[in-house]
Length: 346
Length: 269
Image (cartoon, rainbow over all chains, first blue to last red; front, side):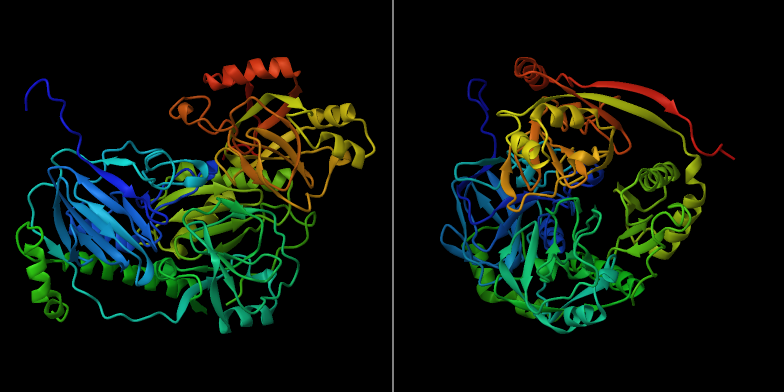
């Protein structure tokens, strides 16, 4: 490189931001006692898998894409990317790609991620991650308090996300063997910590009815609509801590599941908590879709969560190589060969 | 499937005697000392907070002290809930002995006018002059019960009962940064962000309750206030307020801190 030419910082140029695209990692821990929301990927296993496909550590920040994806121009010599999560159409220079496998892109390429055909969220990971300074130990965006990400907010047209120079590296292109789709009928919950604020009938209703995701469903929480859950002694508690998956029931008797961007404390009674293993199911629900809640004991929940974590580790270990680094149309030929259909049976 | 019966009514037992252990899904336990807002409950929570932090239990990720409970986040792959509960029970029994510092803050507040648009209405409601409301509010012996809701947002107890005021019927979607407000029997100091609120706005402080620039500093962290701190408010005129705002923007805390060791109720064994 000549001395007078300033080196081009590699980056991703956001041409169109999509409906709600933000940088997220595994969340901002250790600061909830100071009122700092945890944030982080709503579907953490998908983030981990996307990172694994590009050779990153599991907690590297990626783009969380919601319902409608971004248009991105590649401003780097070469970069490896992967999309995992909801079923989004994805094209590179007009060539259709599949999610769930890594691909290479080069300077001037245009990546278009369209409207989710099913599910709500996917994660676009980039080999080497983004060259940004973490805030309070995390790159996760918390838009309400303007923390993390590029400038604390959702991506905007014209944003450039800087990449670590030379980080794409050499490496095989990897694919994630598909799992058979099994739509979840219920979210598993552990009752409490304030289940004593509800009547027995109220808890029966909560566990037997189906609840529909309302339009008020975002990173802070999902408001559900359905049969009213009866309180036993009012709906004000002395405020206490809230965790990822806490289900609070305000005066209208309609449950709200609080998620990554929740406030750290709250004053409505919490009937139950969605277990960690089922939070990714919730993250993929769209407004208008319905689901029920099933109670498991705290001990059962712990077993389920540890099994789910082991299953995720097994999926990371089971990524399959689909050839050396190539880019379309070479990838297209591979896709047409439909390798994943066979590999999924392995 | 339901949990322990609620504890006896406040006043019939010490909050330390028998906290409830409640599950918050997988990876979090609530240690609840009561259902009331009072200093002894809060002290019990904070004593356990210090004891658990000091014990450095493998698998404990973070602690969130609130008015009446301690939320313990943990990794079930490192420590199972049952084992954690045993360790916490042992710490509850001894946590009263943990010493702590007594911190008293003096925080300037500009009351009324553009700084506190509800001052007149609150005065009218309680049949007081605005000046009396200011005097009563500023003289209240405030104590920080909890930091929550937003970065550095401080929930204060100790509001003079003459100013207890039920919340607004219509919450505001945005309230000014650094607002000083009252709601029910509480007062609040807001961080330097606009926030939604259903409380009544009495004034504004120049102090940045949250300032990320203070990360890593020894005495004052990013969150100026911590649970257990005592707070006195000092009314200031708009001119001094503007001057203090400029200094706070530049990174000066503009709040005064006095510290002294606090005598503990029990002597360490």
